[in-house]
Length: 56
Length: 226
Image 1 (cartoon, rainbow over the protein chains, first blue to last red):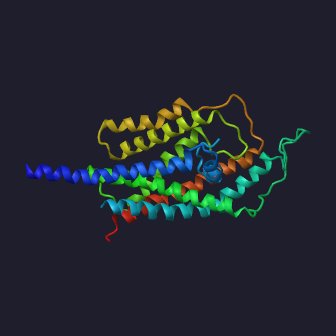
Image 2 (cartoon, rainbow over the protein chains, first blue to last red; image 1 turned 90 degrees about the vertical axis):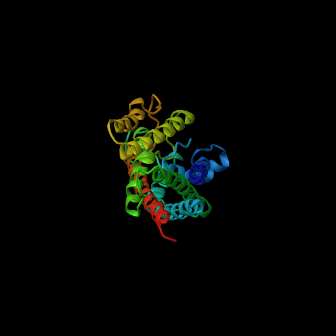
Image 3 (cartoon, each protein chain N blue to C red; image 1 turned 90 degrees about the horizontal axis):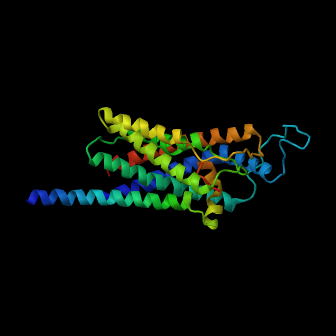
């Protein structure tokens, strides 16, 4: 019983940061590569072209 | 453990982003600025006399330091973002017992990241010089996102799934290319084809180095004994 609880707790601790890291990565990429808001688009323009993100 | 995941991604993204930015300013950005001369009409290829000939030569980087600083900044944001995703994939793969990550193995992860995120989408949607008109941006973004997810998952399956099921990975790599990227019915390019081709190869070359470095640094910081 005790061991099961511990295993689940350890799995939680490991999985949550991974999910958080994946979400953080997705948010950053949304801003740098995907968002069409014109201020963001203009600032990231050259980098988007260089990285071949679909731009405009 | 969780803090190490985050700091590794930030350090790796910072290092790879700066290396990629340096390569971009040597190779990619000058070509991009030369493309803008044709986009803006300062230079004309395919002139009114029907001649497909125009002056060659890159303009200097110019004095737009704010613009170039933004390019460096967004490179770092982009590579840190990809670093988070790569480390999430590495940590998940390790947690599920498929492999033990090493710094040398990180180089392979980086190369596969390049193939999935840069090369596979570029097969259908080549990096474009400014001034090139494409299909609806939403349709291209959807194909691009679908392609990099399918390609990344496909490569992961080929690397870590045992047995015939690994062949699903091959299908995932091929499917987006067989479906094909959204295209226009006409050509619109005003820049010389040589310049557009050079831009594509420079862009992919810089990304290949950036991604290889990202994979190595992610794995290096992640596995380093603190």
